[in-house]
Length: 204
Image: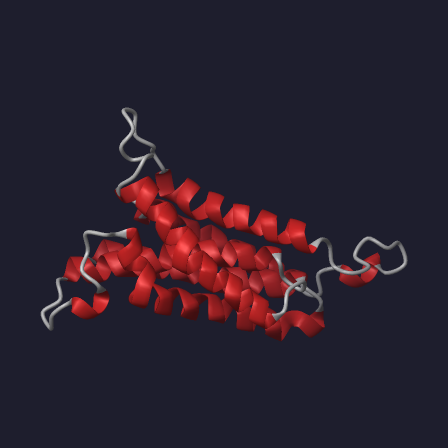
Protein backbone atom coordinates (compact mmCIF):
# COMPACT_ATOMS: atom_id res chain seq x y z
CA UNK A 1 0.00 0.00 0.00
CA UNK A 2 2.72 2.45 0.97
CA UNK A 3 4.68 1.68 -2.20
CA UNK A 4 1.71 2.39 -4.49
CA UNK A 5 0.84 5.59 -2.64
CA UNK A 6 4.42 6.86 -2.88
CA UNK A 7 4.48 6.06 -6.61
CA UNK A 8 1.12 7.84 -7.02
CA UNK A 9 2.47 10.98 -5.34
CA UNK A 10 5.58 10.91 -7.54
CA UNK A 11 3.51 10.54 -10.71
CA UNK A 12 1.09 13.30 -9.74
CA UNK A 13 4.12 15.46 -8.87
CA UNK A 14 4.91 15.26 -12.57
CA UNK A 15 1.79 17.34 -13.20
CA UNK A 16 3.50 20.22 -11.42
CA UNK A 17 6.56 19.58 -13.59
CA UNK A 18 4.50 19.65 -16.77
CA UNK A 19 2.78 22.88 -15.72
CA UNK A 20 6.06 24.56 -14.78
CA UNK A 21 7.82 23.45 -17.97
CA UNK A 22 4.97 24.48 -20.23
CA UNK A 23 4.34 27.82 -18.52
CA UNK A 24 8.00 28.72 -18.88
CA UNK A 25 8.00 27.77 -22.56
CA UNK A 26 5.08 29.95 -23.61
CA UNK A 27 4.85 33.72 -23.86
CA UNK A 28 4.09 35.55 -20.65
CA UNK A 29 0.49 36.46 -21.56
CA UNK A 30 -0.38 32.76 -21.90
CA UNK A 31 1.05 31.58 -18.57
CA UNK A 32 -2.21 31.65 -16.63
CA UNK A 33 -4.12 29.77 -19.33
CA UNK A 34 -1.36 27.14 -19.41
CA UNK A 35 -1.76 26.60 -15.67
CA UNK A 36 -5.55 26.46 -16.02
CA UNK A 37 -5.34 23.75 -18.69
CA UNK A 38 -2.96 21.66 -16.60
CA UNK A 39 -5.26 21.84 -13.58
CA UNK A 40 -8.25 20.98 -15.76
CA UNK A 41 -6.40 17.93 -17.09
CA UNK A 42 -6.14 16.54 -13.57
CA UNK A 43 -9.73 17.40 -12.69
CA UNK A 44 -11.11 15.89 -15.89
CA UNK A 45 -9.06 12.73 -15.39
CA UNK A 46 -10.45 12.21 -11.89
CA UNK A 47 -14.08 12.88 -12.86
CA UNK A 48 -13.99 10.77 -16.02
CA UNK A 49 -12.21 7.89 -14.28
CA UNK A 50 -14.71 7.77 -11.43
CA UNK A 51 -17.81 8.01 -13.61
CA UNK A 52 -16.78 6.14 -16.72
CA UNK A 53 -13.35 5.27 -18.00
CA UNK A 54 -12.06 3.08 -15.15
CA UNK A 55 -14.94 0.68 -15.69
CA UNK A 56 -14.36 0.65 -19.46
CA UNK A 57 -10.66 -0.11 -18.98
CA UNK A 58 -11.33 -2.82 -16.39
CA UNK A 59 -14.58 -4.57 -17.35
CA UNK A 60 -14.28 -7.05 -14.51
CA UNK A 61 -14.15 -4.34 -11.87
CA UNK A 62 -17.22 -2.96 -10.10
CA UNK A 63 -18.15 0.64 -10.83
CA UNK A 64 -16.80 3.12 -8.31
CA UNK A 65 -20.27 3.97 -6.97
CA UNK A 66 -21.12 0.28 -6.63
CA UNK A 67 -18.43 -0.19 -4.01
CA UNK A 68 -19.76 -0.80 -0.54
CA UNK A 69 -18.86 1.19 2.53
CA UNK A 70 -16.12 -1.37 3.21
CA UNK A 71 -14.14 -0.70 0.06
CA UNK A 72 -11.16 -2.92 -0.48
CA UNK A 73 -7.89 -1.00 -0.27
CA UNK A 74 -6.64 -2.66 -3.46
CA UNK A 75 -9.59 -1.18 -5.38
CA UNK A 76 -8.70 2.33 -4.22
CA UNK A 77 -5.04 1.83 -5.14
CA UNK A 78 -5.95 0.58 -8.61
CA UNK A 79 -8.15 3.61 -9.17
CA UNK A 80 -5.45 6.01 -7.98
CA UNK A 81 -2.87 4.40 -10.26
CA UNK A 82 -5.28 4.57 -13.16
CA UNK A 83 -5.97 8.27 -12.56
CA UNK A 84 -2.26 9.08 -12.31
CA UNK A 85 -1.39 7.38 -15.60
CA UNK A 86 -4.46 8.72 -17.40
CA UNK A 87 -3.78 12.32 -16.38
CA UNK A 88 -0.22 11.98 -17.66
CA UNK A 89 -1.40 10.87 -21.10
CA UNK A 90 -3.80 13.81 -21.27
CA UNK A 91 -1.14 16.30 -20.19
CA UNK A 92 1.27 15.15 -22.89
CA UNK A 93 -1.32 16.18 -25.45
CA UNK A 94 -1.95 19.45 -23.66
CA UNK A 95 1.68 20.51 -23.76
CA UNK A 96 1.91 20.04 -27.51
CA UNK A 97 -0.98 22.38 -28.26
CA UNK A 98 -0.04 25.10 -25.77
CA UNK A 99 -0.82 28.61 -27.08
CA UNK A 100 -2.63 27.14 -30.07
CA UNK A 101 -6.00 25.95 -28.81
CA UNK A 102 -8.94 27.57 -27.09
CA UNK A 103 -10.09 26.42 -23.68
CA UNK A 104 -13.42 24.89 -24.81
CA UNK A 105 -11.77 22.87 -27.57
CA UNK A 106 -9.04 21.74 -25.19
CA UNK A 107 -11.60 20.53 -22.63
CA UNK A 108 -13.47 18.62 -25.35
CA UNK A 109 -10.32 16.88 -26.56
CA UNK A 110 -9.22 16.08 -23.03
CA UNK A 111 -12.59 14.51 -22.27
CA UNK A 112 -12.47 12.46 -25.49
CA UNK A 113 -8.95 11.23 -24.74
CA UNK A 114 -9.67 10.26 -21.15
CA UNK A 115 -13.16 8.82 -21.70
CA UNK A 116 -12.54 6.69 -24.79
CA UNK A 117 -9.04 6.51 -26.26
CA UNK A 118 -7.12 5.94 -23.04
CA UNK A 119 -9.44 3.39 -21.35
CA UNK A 120 -9.67 1.35 -24.54
CA UNK A 121 -5.89 1.36 -24.88
CA UNK A 122 -5.58 0.18 -21.27
CA UNK A 123 -8.14 -2.56 -21.81
CA UNK A 124 -6.61 -3.88 -25.03
CA UNK A 125 -3.00 -3.71 -23.89
CA UNK A 126 -3.15 -4.53 -20.17
CA UNK A 127 -6.44 -6.31 -19.45
CA UNK A 128 -8.04 -8.17 -22.35
CA UNK A 129 -8.15 -7.96 -26.12
CA UNK A 130 -6.13 -8.76 -29.22
CA UNK A 131 -2.78 -7.58 -27.88
CA UNK A 132 -3.09 -9.37 -24.54
CA UNK A 133 -4.44 -12.60 -26.05
CA UNK A 134 -1.74 -13.05 -28.67
CA UNK A 135 0.47 -16.17 -28.50
CA UNK A 136 3.29 -13.80 -27.68
CA UNK A 137 1.53 -11.16 -25.55
CA UNK A 138 2.22 -7.48 -25.96
CA UNK A 139 4.49 -6.20 -23.20
CA UNK A 140 4.23 -2.56 -22.20
CA UNK A 141 6.77 -1.48 -19.62
CA UNK A 142 6.00 1.64 -17.60
CA UNK A 143 3.18 2.64 -19.91
CA UNK A 144 5.49 3.23 -22.86
CA UNK A 145 2.70 2.39 -25.28
CA UNK A 146 -0.52 3.01 -23.41
CA UNK A 147 0.51 6.30 -21.81
CA UNK A 148 3.34 7.75 -23.83
CA UNK A 149 2.58 6.48 -27.31
CA UNK A 150 -1.10 7.35 -26.98
CA UNK A 151 -0.37 10.76 -25.47
CA UNK A 152 2.36 11.41 -28.03
CA UNK A 153 0.11 10.36 -30.91
CA UNK A 154 -2.64 12.69 -29.70
CA UNK A 155 -0.04 15.45 -29.38
CA UNK A 156 1.27 14.80 -32.90
CA UNK A 157 -2.19 14.80 -34.44
CA UNK A 158 -3.22 17.92 -32.55
CA UNK A 159 -0.11 19.92 -33.38
CA UNK A 160 -0.14 18.77 -37.01
CA UNK A 161 -3.78 19.74 -37.43
CA UNK A 162 -3.33 23.14 -35.77
CA UNK A 163 0.01 23.96 -37.38
CA UNK A 164 2.61 26.30 -35.87
CA UNK A 165 1.66 29.33 -33.84
CA UNK A 166 0.80 32.34 -35.99
CA UNK A 167 4.00 34.12 -37.13
CA UNK A 168 6.12 31.59 -35.18
CA UNK A 169 8.62 31.19 -38.01
CA UNK A 170 8.55 34.72 -39.43
CA UNK A 171 12.05 36.16 -39.27
CA UNK A 172 10.80 39.45 -37.89
CA UNK A 173 8.72 37.99 -35.04
CA UNK A 174 10.43 34.69 -34.20
CA UNK A 175 12.27 36.31 -31.30
CA UNK A 176 8.93 37.06 -29.62
CA UNK A 177 8.33 33.33 -29.17
CA UNK A 178 11.38 32.67 -27.04
CA UNK A 179 10.55 30.96 -23.70
CA UNK A 180 9.67 33.76 -21.33
CA UNK A 181 11.09 32.02 -18.24
CA UNK A 182 14.01 29.65 -18.68
CA UNK A 183 14.15 29.01 -14.93
CA UNK A 184 10.64 27.55 -15.04
CA UNK A 185 11.63 25.35 -17.97
CA UNK A 186 14.61 24.03 -16.03
CA UNK A 187 12.67 23.49 -12.80
CA UNK A 188 9.85 21.75 -14.65
CA UNK A 189 12.29 19.45 -16.42
CA UNK A 190 13.94 18.48 -13.13
CA UNK A 191 10.52 17.85 -11.54
CA UNK A 192 9.65 15.51 -14.39
CA UNK A 193 12.98 13.77 -13.93
CA UNK A 194 12.20 13.13 -10.25
CA UNK A 195 8.66 12.04 -11.11
CA UNK A 196 9.98 9.44 -13.52
CA UNK A 197 11.39 7.46 -10.61
CA UNK A 198 7.86 6.94 -9.36
CA UNK A 199 6.42 6.44 -12.84
CA UNK A 200 8.78 3.69 -13.99
CA UNK A 201 9.11 1.89 -10.68
CA UNK A 202 5.48 2.34 -9.71
CA UNK A 203 4.23 0.78 -12.93
CA UNK A 204 5.43 -2.61 -11.69
